[in-house]
Image (cartoon, rainbow, N blue to C red; front, side):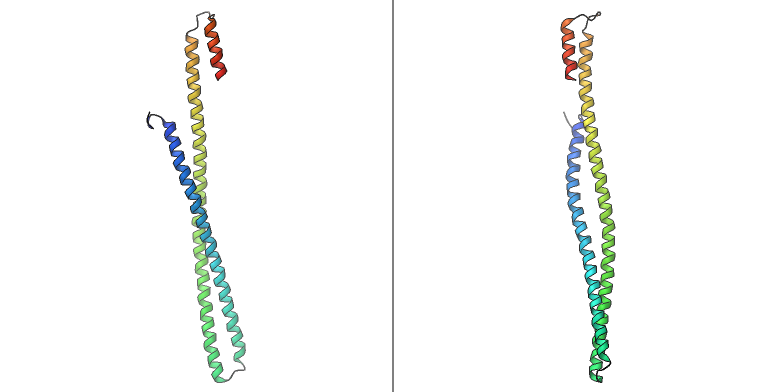
Length: 171
């Protein structure tokens, strides 16, 4: 009997394939969540570095008031350098935060799709179980109908009654 002749076997094969895909999806989701976490952490790190450079520039600005002309010129260059680095880290933090947010949206969508897949698998398994039960019930009904058709009109055949009782116990 081929899969086309037995839709239950085909459905079970499909379920196995879906379960394999589900497992791989869970792994991909975990990886995606880890990427989002890493991006958020990198954004926070860049924000901290930007604050540190701003703090350094502020300290240098404080030294500027009492410095001679040559030192003041050197301090101004250092302040500009610190402020440029601070600006670069701020931009980097914003970019990484935006990337983390975009990846987070994709990750949330992936999680939703995985839940839908799990629901589909669960529902399909229940449907298969019901179809198997219905097939079994149908087979038992055929046996009962066969036994009932062999009864005499008055229903007094003892062996048939015993057989019918055995069939009903099986159900």
